[in-house]
Image 1 (cartoon, rainbow, N blue to C red):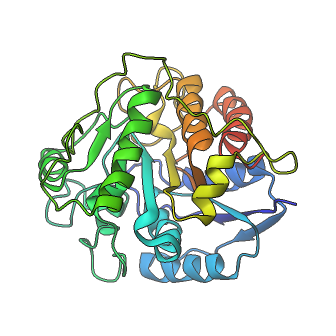
Image 2: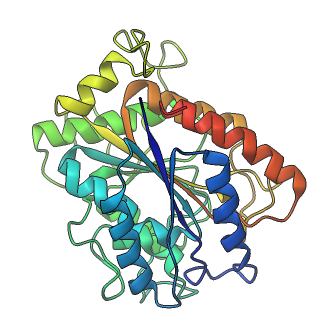
Length: 318
């Protein structure tokens, strides 16, 4: 039986939003929506370093087959992403669904808020004691839905070769993840482009074939777990595995308003779900982070209640 553990982290001090204290309730409500077999609530402190250490302990002690972390601000994600990085190494690709890049440093950040630095910290560059000990390489990151980037973040994305899929294009997203894996397998030196591939930092071209990539080996599902053949092979055979991060400000604020840092445009809920489903059908999803929900409207809570259930199913863990 597939056991899901939810780790609830009601951290809000890492956010720069004036309404950030709502994140405490948001973390609780998201954890309720996950409906996991096991649930751990991390006691948070004003000191983000102490909270991060507690999150790491909670993750190490989690006994479920799949861990969902609910925040809280995006700074919560330091340890939940670091854990599969330690376990899977270069096989891991992090798909970062977020309106923002979260790629600032203390020197470049306009706000000084850690939630805008955490992905950069996961590459090893950030505040003292709040960086990954085993950093991600830029080719392990795919930004998805980002549309509010600071100038310093844009420069870093280009220089580091981070791939960016700005819109709801499942084909482009899958191709970007696959390119990350191809670079790993062929040990492509940084700054070079393999033949017939798109330069890092750009969106792969739209396919001239079907709307979704061909996945001949993903149709045979285990009747007990729903896991596809290709995802089972990825989990145990050295293939690419994916951590999915979702900051709910990736959604269009005209549809979903319960976030502290809204940005115009964005994905519709069904577009977000379609993208996550495409990832889950192609790759083994080894972790999920749900962040930055600031409860403000009943309609948003109703939307999320259904969406979170569907996202879990899309990741292969209904």
